[in-house]
Image (cartoon, rainbow, N blue to C red; front, side, top):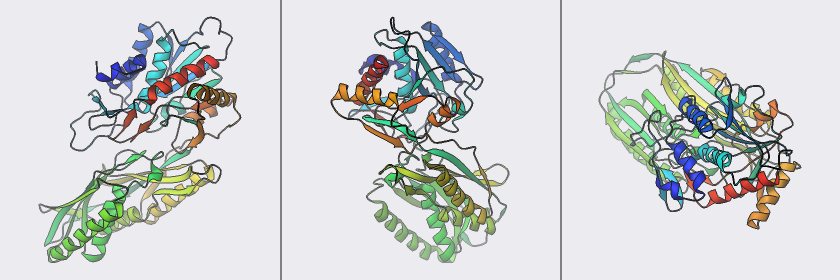
Length: 483
């Protein structure tokens, strides 16, 4: 067993350790589903699985509390799979390698999966801890939250009967979340041809790396640099000054992660070698100065390549590079209803050469205001459509409108206040949660989301603050007792 199993509360950390040993990429949740079913059967817990793979476990009330309303504990099974480029790791087969470092639990060069593994662990611990006092319980574990909210969209009929839902997928101890942004993805597809590389060209590879990245909802207001935009800036400059021809571009991976790495392969006429390399050095110095206060480890490198045979056709190159430079990225509006909350944002998530001579650019838009979400989606679509791309959108998902007068919030806030002698912050979150979709299916639900403190979520810097887990557990148990 890993060192983390000696931490308190041990029952929670033991469940979390077991979860980290089960591969669980989004859309490949078969093994974690089997783990949950086996857990239920070993502990004699009634469970149900729907067609998409969501699992609900049910635990009867503590004696004397049978007449209390049913409470749902909700978390998602899947995890974001990101690693540093120099780390050998297979998310489909390898167990996460955890370590304790200066008060935090983190993984070795990969995402930790505490989003939402620690929420799952707490729910499992409640199910097997006879010391927790509660009314009837349902623990819902959903699939594919990270890449499509598929489990919440396709939640089977009759899976839930509860009146209150505690979402265990938040990342700031001391904060109670009662609302979240809705979102939609915009996918632009460029169709290209390759043509022979021009004569007397020198070829280079530029790499941008070591950016902080992070969650495209929670971290979008922190000024994190987007690797795709950064590489595109260099290409744009080279196209104006040195007849640059692009051969390849790859950057980012996940729709809900701010991209940390990107690279491009391109050529310039040999006669421009000295001028281009001088321009590159000035460009790199400018970027390091521009990013110095927000990206302390930013790295950009330029290396000569062997001669390349083929380059992108001019029309597609022009459309792609201009679109990547021109498309909005980051926060587009702050909330007037809840000061300090990001209202609307967009993230240029990934650029990939794909099958069928296509380049697929994936971006995601979020907003707590539905009309604003539509508008920022239209901005992004317009840029790519003008650049000649075919543009499509995901189905999107709704936001969760805050209900500051709910009894569940009142009980949870009072429990926090009494436990820790301080007032919790009540707020909405710019990240997407599954709560909006649950509310569509069960409109009478009251919901609150809380959790321990996580940082660097959706990046290999993901870490879980150890000192906040006992507080998370204590609050969960107290809320269940009071309800």
